[in-house]
Every structure is written in structure tokens, then in C-alpha cells.
Image (cartoon, rainbow, N blue to C red; front, side, top):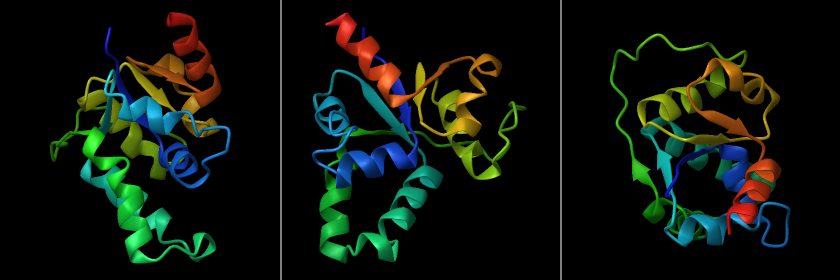
Length: 141
């Protein structure tokens, strides 16, 4: 069964930048095409903004190459101007992931962010850490 997924920005950036890191499994996972990552205009803008952080020392061609390893595999979800009433995230900057997961009918939002993880019982989709999600996917195979 194919899952509809929302990865938060930190997960995506870690998967793209740290090829030997804890989240390196994510890149081949989303590229396999068995499951569908979701993205909205706001989440893509956030991803681009984070990739331009000076601490990463990435030039434009490097950023474009990293985006090419993610964006072709996502389903773009257009969010309506008037989003229905949703649970509020403690961190207003993370609300975009709740909105995307809700409007995009996601099965799982993957995040290590405590402000999102505490919302698991308030949403109509699962919210899991990358480690928990990865472990669950390995058990399915």
C-alpha cells in the first residue's frame, strides 16, 4: 500500500546533505516511488530558504542539484486560501506541515520536531519520528 507522506524541512535537509547520516535512508526511499511525498508552495519555499543558510556553504548549482534529488518525486498540493479549522501547532512556523498533511490527505507526517510530535493525537494522520517511521517501514518489507 502506497503512503502519502509529509517530511518536515529538517528531515529533507538532513537526508540531502548528510549522505552518511541517520536520515540518509530517506533519499532512496522517496526516490523509489513506492510512496508519495507531498509538498506545498510554502514547504518548498522553506526548503529553499534553509538550503541557503550560510552554515551549509552551498552555491546555487549545489542547491539546484539537491532540489533535483527531491522535488521531482513529490506531489504538489495547492493549499486553499481559507484552510479549514485545524489544530494549532505551538510553533506557528510548523503549521504549514499540519496544513499540507491535512489538505494533502497524508497518511504520515515525519518529523523530529517536538512541536509537531505532540500533535499526533490531535490530527487525522500519524506523526512519527524518522526513526519510528523507518522501523515501521522495515517491518513491512
